[in-house]
Length: 396
Image (tube, rainbow, N blue to C red; front, side, top):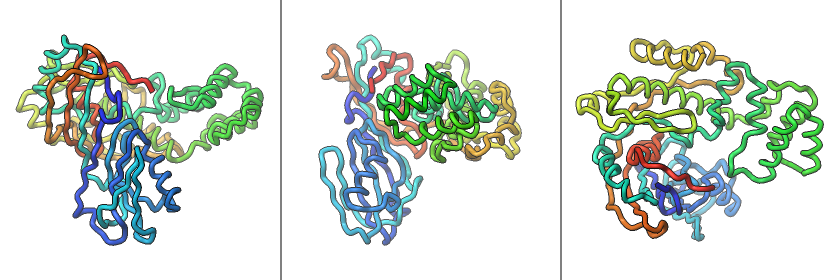
């Protein structure tokens, strides 16, 4: 199976309640973008119309490798704006308050899955029969972009492994990173600890990336790994903490579901941080018990009781961490208490027919569309729908 062979294979439409975002302060725009990162789109609009970036309000960030529609607000003092470019369109639709992150209700997804083998179709059809029962509401791979070799930066900070944290930041890279940064990180890995040599490499290659320049300069001057981490900006720190807290939540929910799902109905899926457990089918009584049930995130200074406490203690023991040690996150941020639904149930689910895949000779494709509440991952539903079908990752 293949995902996102072209942006139109992954369509995202933001759902808002216009009554909740009503207001007179701003003009409300529909922003449609194709294969563009959200923040880059916002920056482009800000520069083109000479608007401070902070004056562009939005409800959420959308996928880059997709065709997406969302709403943004811009104060009326900048006038009525319009944009119609091949991959970026801005259309005035009305008035609103200044939009804030989280003001959306959810998203509608229309996803075409390609490259399906004909022999896999019976298995997929069986999966699709139970798709209305949803899947565990896991945080998916998009949440774990900062995880390398199953190592979480926040966890290493908690354990006081500052050199390991710096090593992850300065030597690990994604394929999508710029060549100059990948080359730098490879050089640092090869010459780890020789900060004079690394510093000379940075100067000779005119590298401007502030994080790496500042961290290497600090290591050259003091050799203090903990101090080098002070140059990590707050946005990245929040991402690191959120990644580890999300992983802990996934593990807790997986443990909880083992109490309700018989072994013969469990299916495991390998991903960046370990394994996710899905159910092939679920008893109606168990489904009704769990469909509105929530499980809390793990945070220090919170008293958990009963089943929640039992599961959290078990997961933290497996992680070799105590709940009090979560306070050792220092200036990275903090673990925030929240409650999240255990199950992810798609609304207005529509399943297309298997068709000939025009992009993959001899293969089939199918399109699914559904709505999800905010904070849930469309790719979890795809994982559930295609359990047992090998996923060929799209090259980036």
